[in-house]
Length: 187
Image (spheres, rainbow, N blue to C red):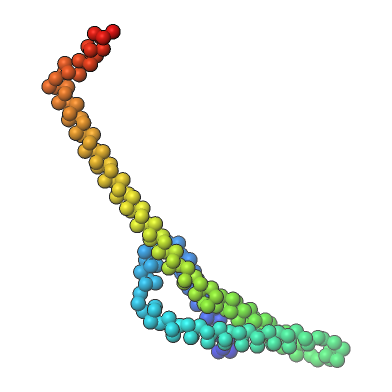
């Protein structure tokens, strides 16, 4: 594999690796938000945009070159004139066809997963999603705090009522029975 196709293959593997890291479910939204809000990203954005456009142009050129090579080696048919050619020459043509097809697939997938189309759209969606998830998490924490505060208030009110009940039980047991006496007298 030549240097250009090795670079394209390395770029493809890098893209797949970045996509897999971005899709990890156990990284918290707050951590993604912290990662994406680093000021270094905004400073590098201009450089990265130019680099991605350059990479796209190079991938398109390499893809078109691979298409041309595949068509060139696919067009060679073994006919009667070529039948006198040795088996080594046919194997050599088949090998070149395989390599051109491999290069076509590598450049095609690299172009398909190109950061401008996939990674950048994921990078633009992930921060928004994680900001929304962080906001939902913040809202849930606020609701939990409100419920705890409400339960503490209810507990204090329950304790106050229990003390009042005990005071009424000990201090004036007749006062609890008086309403029933009044009901008995009215009937």
